[in-house]
Image 1 (cartoon, helix red, strand yellow):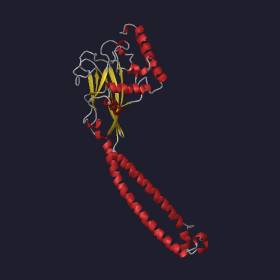
Image 2 (spheres, helix red, strand yellow):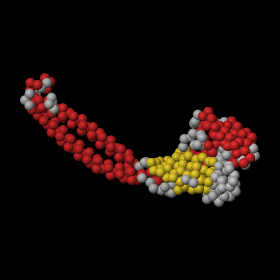
Image 3 (cartoon, one colour):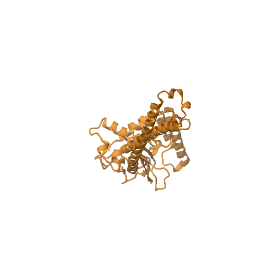
Image 4 (tube, helix red, strand yellow):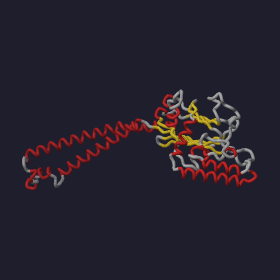
Length: 333
């Protein structure tokens, strides 16, 4: 079993592989409560595979009718709808080709196992694989999250090959909730759930359903899941706005400084006037020379005041933005 948590700026990831068996028919993931008010969405990847066996048999049993709960709400059907929608939006020939390759590889494994394969013959599984590939659309194979009737032990079911041999985009929990709420008697509000738990159960879960059975479906098979938590801190928007304001002020200061430096440079109009080089002043600059000199001096003083004011504004903005940025980073971490 693996259980890894990593932090990537405003994204947190939890991934795990679990093995279901008798007295271990469900697994619950507690979503980190830190900054849960900043949580914008959870993206889900799930797929099944045979159980890891402790006996001498070489091929385990796959998942049968996995259910997914958000707290006490059974959102399994909505997840299936989203998975099927994602499959339908893909190039169908590519999906069929990837599924066929995955099935061929599994049938080859059965063939190589020979007499040690616990099934009733590879011929039956070949017929089932052929039937699965002929299904239209291909997503129609995904009526459940794992199906024991799809090949021996359910090992030919399409759920076993998602995100491994079959390319598929992640499922948005926000869209899952939207679909669930469209038909639910009791709508789910992610922001009002408080602590959030996602539970994976073989069959209906004993924690939430009176219809739970300890033997049907058989608690078997393995599940790999990956949960990507996306957060957005409003402070980030503020920091980005402050950063833009600072950059705009820098650009404005740079532009005005360039204008002033040109005027007071060796060939600048102010320098020529101050040096008494009136004959070198351009014709369009001569009329009202005295008034223009006074005006230029005033503009120079104004520019100096503006530069000082802009620099003070920049200092204030930087003093305010850096602590906010640090707070934002701390909250994300």
